[in-house]
Length: 404
Length: 90
Image (cartoon, rainbow over all chains, first blue to last red; front, side, top):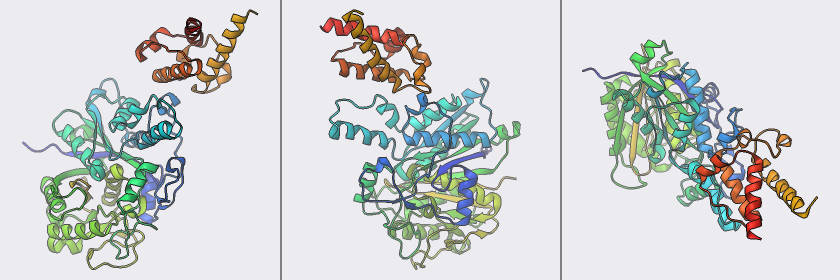
């Protein structure tokens, strides 16, 4: 039996680069980093003041009755899902809603609400917290809110694996389609980590860059946190064709693996195994891939080890690959990362344009791939890989290829 | 106006203010007969308003969240429920 083909028919996103996919993609293509000074009430008196923050939320038209039940990460997920569904021209009706579902990757969950709760109890001496604390905080809230907003009554749940959550969500959504549990899945990720407690926790790890994120650059200092959400509409090729949907790209395959070694230190073998498994599932050979959107966090360890992993999988073809880390522009949006980076991959395939690694200054012999420094590159992109690795050693790689 | 009525009115005013703080849109149109379903308030938020009233008046309202929405229809219903509890306490 031939494997069910899965296609991407809609894209949605919101992050520091823009409030929708056209804005985000334009900024990515221009190599414009949105990392800069951050300020918000939720940061309180935290020291770190560099991040990738959404400048202003768009007019989302949601009722207060709904938004009062949501933490920011759920709101971002709903905004991105709305764009993706509209982009796909998907009409959810009584007849099809039980065949439409959603998987939303979340790495951090509703920390704005957690922060508010601790402050209320410990600082303001209140004896109870906001009544919506549980439904705001829970990692499954984003998927639930997306389902409520758009009437999706098929399989709906969260996927969580820290920084690879979105790719695991996309993988799991594709599984629902292949297993025949749904015809359409809205999948992606969301996180809103620019919160006092979360930033303090990342400060404690000493992996945050003081100025900006410079993936693969010899003078890189670490990652920069960002907030955002990305969503794609996935459907079986058969379903997309039957409804005359715009087919943006094919989700060619997924590769999942675990390092099973250390909770924070990455391995070469785990990511390499995930990339190889992804190529295998996609039926692609190394030479078929033209672009890798790297995990590329900008930490010393990740970028060196990811380079080694790519070389181990792609062999001599590694030097013909275009590689870039768009985290240099939208920051590390944790559970949303893979989804925002899939936007880059789909558009790279569609437009034959590789978005650059911004903020690059100095070549590093340990990161000797073509990392597309600072300037976009026009080239045919037949297939692209999007790498997501994570604390916990949970690796998830997805492949897209042009449809047609 | 009797002392009891005056107390009810002031109680009503306090409750109206607390409800208005959670409502959507033009709060100046909210009165005693406004249906709670017109306030754009989530049912759980109504429970939170009742918790606020417990704190403000030193009373305990025994109701679970499901009952809260079923048994109360208008702003006046809340005021009356609270008034009875305040009187019972006195």
